[in-house]
Image (cartoon, rainbow, N blue to C red; front, side, top):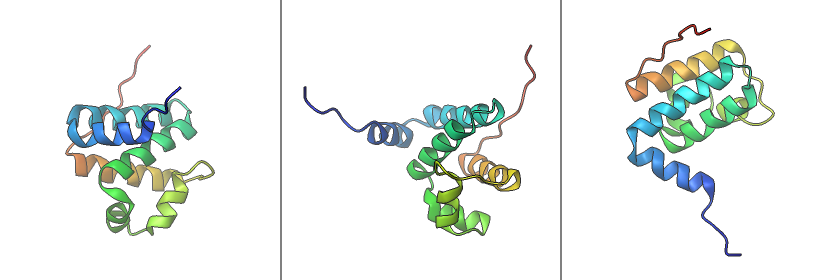
Length: 105
């Protein structure tokens, strides 16, 4: 069976060309975090950052080192709530988007 394209490359290309997909991905990351799926949410945020502003620019916005941010969003990372919300806030601002929480039964 022939090898297929790397999934991350496909996602990154779609993020670059489709603003709606970018917004949905950021929203999904936050939804996962709120639902307690922290590892999934961090993974989506990491992919989002890699495909959009990058960790260097995010580091400049948060006054944290790029390596520290990468570790926070890595598989073994355990960011404090303050840090994860600061990251989300910066990403929303860069995207020109404001996510809101809505209660649903």
